[in-house]
Image (cartoon, rainbow over all chains, first blue to last red; front, top):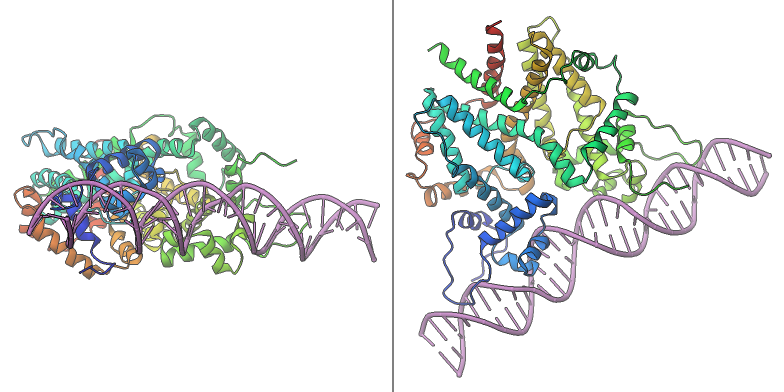
Length: 249
Length: 249
DNA sequence: GCATAAGCGAGTACAGCGTACGCACTTTGT
DNA sequence: ACAAAGTGCGTACGCTGTACTCGCTTATGC
């Protein structure tokens, strides 16, 4: 009996994510695997940006017809889910500091790993921006590692959870900004040089010094001159803020 | 002489953003204004999500043909730029605490304003995720206000700048998570209840307790039971971390 | 008053997208 | 040998952004 059309993509998605896929007893052997499709899609996204990841383009890379992909993946959304989980393996499988290291060192390491992952695959911020992350094994492993580190801080469970979210949220927010330049160059084809020229025009023609005094002052005081690693600066402040919780106990 | 096709959308975009648009000496009066189009597009995005904002849908709301919009806006990208800047007016024009208030109070106020703005217009996280923000007057005003608050902390200029980025990045990263549930319900039509049912199935069938011990422990210790305002928790930690910089001076 | 130039609204069209459907084919169990 | 089930994928539909082009409206210069 055929199931109704709409329904539980979610279950299929879970099967995909966790690899629970029994080989069918009959029928021809599949020429592809889900892993191959996901790999091709990730490579395409890395190389040409997520906007250029279409089912047709992915299928071209694999030398098959566009609709063939739907034998392996229920829809593009599920493919993106699996892509997202798959790249998290890079973080989950990286050699982490020993548990004997101070929590601050370990938490910073995970933060930098998360940041590096986004920098390698900037499109992950564009995917599912407004969705909850897929419940895949690699994302779970990363989350588990974060929790394992945060628990050694010695806070209450609900605080430990909140700290984990805090670090994760900060990393995601902060890395976005630093990735922008690369993204723009890749997708719009505009070089940084061109863009700075245009930006100069903005400052000269539109920016009103009197209307935005603090921006002007910041400029005049040379706040932009000194190159600061914004990510590391913010990360240390976040960790300081966490450490401050321990002071009064 | 007609100008070459490709070229400086950027300048047109700036003209749009800063309202530098001289009325043409001849020709019929426009039936629309850019503001009207932007307003309609924002309303549509608020109501049905950014995915449903197409030039055709926006034009329907205004009772004009789809192509008519291109008399006012060079492309959809520029429209999104102006939309983004326009909603920032809500933050820029909100009554801020007096400059005599402590910087911590004022900075927290701005953070909550930024958060509220995202919650009212969740699509703003989907727009230009990988691009730098448009250089519009309202975004400038908000940035100026952040800087004006941060400068009273009493740090070096480059530190002041970094602190501003830190708070902004945290807010953006943290608010994303809290917006997800609403977004999903709106766009996919799946209710929270349905999703929790599906999620139960995940925990029972796929989640391996031994493989993710820290997640399991967190669950058993009741870390998820106590409702925590994650945003406020993280914000206070971030502010604590900033305050810790002042200790040794 | 009238010709003219310029801006306006919008119909048509095209390339690209995700994907529902259906068909020919291959492999396996009986 | 035959049936059942799964595979590859061609075709098609509705959607998208937008280039092009047309006739129409309006304000200016004479």
